[in-house]
Image 1 (cartoon, rainbow over the protein chains, first blue to last red):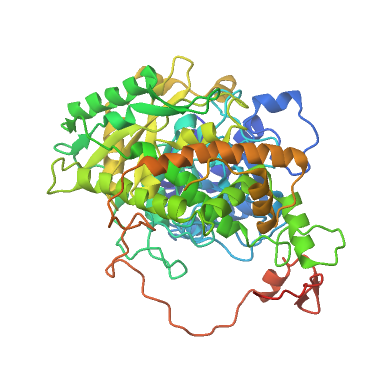
Image 2 (tube, rainbow over the protein chains, first blue to last red):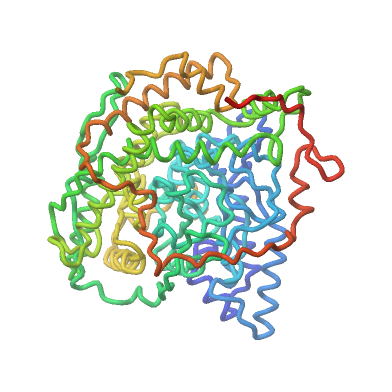
Length: 531
Length: 107
């Protein structure tokens, strides 16, 4: 087994005990990237090469030399008897939506293609303070706007390591693909409607959307500021706990980063799950499917393989002493996407107004005599089709004559979604759940180009993840099996505010209960020639 | 009353307000997609809402116990002026260069 296939937890332990050096681990990751990643995403992409279709293309920027300097420093500190931190020498990647000082920070957009961040995002500072080593920046949907990673203007776009003919999901597609392919054991992503959990599910890795405010957003280029959550993508639950431990906590730079003590997430993993009450909801076993021919929204059952994976997880948890409660009502689940179409677009349009070609970012070089012409020309050339779509819808639904019907109404529907969760998690209520178990996505990873272009169908890929963003609650996805086509299936735990520790504990219990199942021995296709 | 569709006229007005200069192909695609999304958004109108239902701006309730203390309102010099100004597309003698700003009379 290559060191790059070890978990972050095992790597940190071995590096700290000097059984392996940080430089050796880095070299293993760089070798793996060389084997599977192919060309990094570039703005000046020439034309597709035959080899591109078989590579992962997770990276936009590989920071190999700086990473090597850091790895050598970690090894020096360990040799001197110092403690570099709980993530000593563990490589991680960063979704290229976080600022890292002195590093290009592109948001996968022409708008910021040449932007060099003058400061570093808090979660990145904290990971480095814990001894982790930033290996590079990974690709994403442009400004995080998408669920397949196909809207990035840095080409080639990432592909799914389980089948490179399929999307890795999005918007943290590069993050999930990099972890699944063993290019780095950890990645820092963001989740606004499911952008950590959906790609994690598609790529067979663990992804955690923390409670809103649990992790600082300082240094994150904003999509929808009331929904955005930074969080970990990792190889297993323990690694996600280890990473969350490092990045969570209050931050004087972010007024929404709450003053809530950070528990010992890793230490709590071994606590018993016996007696916990976990719910199953019929509202997560049927999906809304926009009929492409008629545009009508139809209710369909969840694909049988995905429902079976969730029910299998419930059975394994029941074997561990978890009490499974059926028929939990969450009637407002189906309103998550319509409300998201409104709220996220209003916030995105507001956040995107700052890109005007004047203060930073792309500026069209044509000489014009009027600043308004400069704005229009710059924004026309620098924004891709997805940012434009979001700006226009955001402006429409927040216009004075429509705000009452659309924006203000969506904010009230958000209250109903939040109320659904408050009722089922209420310790004095009828259901008294500790967590809810659901599928993460309505389908497994879909083929490249199959959905992109249909903005409604693409948005509905997030229908089972977006309620947690509206409600602000934490949600954890982890691998729950494979389809007959050997594509990963994700299962999801949701819990009340700041219950990340409990969700991680349930996830770990499920991992242990299914450790010997045959699907766990199957590796992503891109790794099979390396065995 | 909610309008059935975003007309091309309204679309073009939105594009102007958004400072977007769109080509014909983009206009066609974006206009069609906006109306597809609007059909979904219209679902919100059918949801019964209590009269006094409050809005939710953030899912998590920011109580005084968990909200951060406001930062002291103290001026501090920026440590990264050079790095920040290095990102300005056109800079002359420390000033940002822009084309003429047309006079606008506010109504």
